Amino acid sequence: MSKSSLYDNAEILHVSLTDGRVHREPIPTELYEKYIGGRGLGVKLLYDSLAPSIDPLSPDNLLVFAVGPSTATSVPTAGRFVVITKSPQTGTIFDSHAGGYFAPQLRRAGLAAVVFHGKSPSQVYLWINDSQVEIRDASKYWGKDTTETTDGLIEDTDPKAQVACIGPGGENLGLMAAIMTDKHRAAGRGGVGAVMGSKNLKAIVARGTGDVGVHDPDRLKLAVERARRLLKRNGVTDKSLPVYGTPVLVNVANELGMLPTFNFQEGTFNDAEGVSGEKLLERFSAGTYNCHGCPIGCGRVSLIKGKKVGGPEYETIWSLGPQCGINDLEFIAIANNQCNLLGLDTISVGSTIGAAMELVQIGKLDAPLKFGDTTGVLEIIDDIAHARGLGAEMGEGSKRFTERYGAPELAMQVKGLEIPAYDPRGAQGHALGYATSNRGGCHLRSYLIGPEVLGSPVLIDRDSPKGKADLVMLYQDLSAAMDSMVVCRFTNFAWTVDDYAEMLAAGTGLQIDGRDILRIGERIYNLERLFNLREGFTAEDDTLPPRFFKPLPEGGSRKRVVHLDVMIPEYYSLRGWDTKGQPTKDTLKKLAL
Image (cartoon, rainbow, N blue to C red; front, side, top):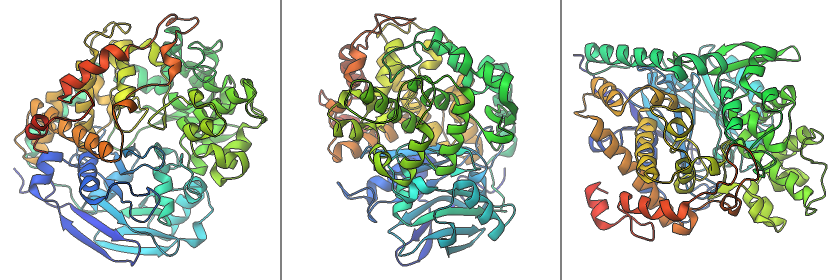
């Protein structure tokens, strides 16, 4: 065994942007034993440090960039980082994730997390060069897009450095602003880019050359070999995702009547084939993209009008396509690239445009936005990023935007966050996951599309609410632990909870098994719940827009509605929460909260 164990050579870097001071602190043993790292570490730091009811765009908010104990090791897909903050879009605690190659640089620089405090009096970026940390002037990059910023900062620092930055969307404090890395990978959701912009922080540039030690290299090698074999044996991770990427889901969702169309008014798109993963591969493929340490390679590179661009992913094809009634795949790729350059969340942007189109449809908004028509879409995306005119209103997200025009029911959101590309009427468990997500409308908190749609690990009845509360809780707890390691969500198509535990134990020296992994995840999920309760959220927020309690008119999910009335009480009971959705004293004691 090596002498290294979990975070022996990783610290928390605190950066006070207000006065320029920086300092490092070790991670207390109890903290990593209870929360691992990544999402769990960030959630604990926020819960302990933030006073209730602060303005998310004020200097009082914290912005945490965190990696995990698996980052930059041989664990497959462990090249991701997570941004944790209080969301200006939702008011909830929030974590947003990105792949690419930025995270290993932080970890090799000896860091488990970077915590930003306060607000800089001028526009700056942070340069981390192994143990050296500098706050540098970024005024020449303010106003530039994310590609120009990335290229310029690498030229200014080190050709082997990696950049995480905001574009005009974050600079102008748009609530759908993303943080971009590797030019087309995004910590996209919740307005984390706006929090970065509110601190006058344009970017973090990181270069690390240190070794990342593991506790038991031989044991980890065996665990990793098994994990890679499992990924190769799984049809989703070895065939579907590597060949077609996430857009492979377009035809699948459409056939089941779950592809949201015309702002979720329908669940079937009449030209799904034209915007499918198969069509993207046939017409525009220019190669694939693997994040650091990932053997899956789900990323797409497309050749659009002679230029190579990243993506688009399934969620983006949907949000800028069928959600808006648009079937022009080349246009969708162009709009996706524009969002990446400007630093915007494509899911929320496309969904909000869809809501605007329905407002136009019912006569509550006069704007050049119409279902099925690309006219004005690129212009409104640019206006959203620069907070101009109607774009400034839409930049607040669909919830605030539709409320402004007297039709809040047209916002397809939960807790202020736009719902992604699966109509919840078509999958009861997935619907419950949306409603109970601690960060708002999110498909990744509990990705029951696996068992309910794709048959992974087994196919279950998507129409039945029976047993779904138990599954949602299981997936939420496992996801919280995975996000704390930090590894990719797609691995749970192939790995069991014991596989995660074995790699974590071998790498860190923690005495941990699958049950412990789930208990840690449960602790994190409950702490997030406590944060949201402290912010004023209640059981009434664990719901869906009224549209989903009315049946779809046609398609593979016609006549279905969501049965939250059946699932929520069972879910609360299994969670150890009272009827108001509050964790009981016994639950808090069990979880050492």
